[in-house]
Length: 219
Image (tube, rainbow, N blue to C red):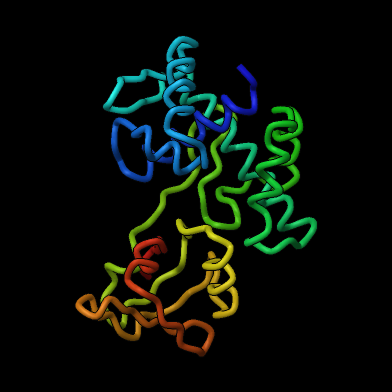
């Protein structure tokens, strides 16, 4: 099997399972994340099963084996450290770095990634707040809670952005809101599906769906 394809699949399976807190990732979810047909996914999942990287159950889904999970975490470590390296050293915007890291992650050796980790002083998270796995596969930081659950007057710091589409990241940038910034909830109207925060002296309105994708730590 082509190494790049294997790494993309195990990473996708890991991220789907982690996001949904589910033991199995469905074939459809894997297909949508990777932008391929369900038929192609089924064939690949069977090959991952044969290779001992995943356990595939037809019509139910797939989960990674311990070996598959360790591979997924190594790929995520590469990807997230490369993203942070591009942001810090080349001043690339956080809505630009994902696609570049996708291209580079398969070519970077673990030795190079370890050097980048040391150069960056062993960071806990990437520019989007995603935790960076250690070389041994453990994670360095906790995530936080959805901003949508915070009530009026709650002060918080943004810890992680789950929706990393370029459009949403640019929206946050234009609003002066990024990982590590402190803000306060001005209004939260669940019935209206809207939430307003104040950050840096200006107000920013968010849909509840977007607020669910922002993980914060209350202050």
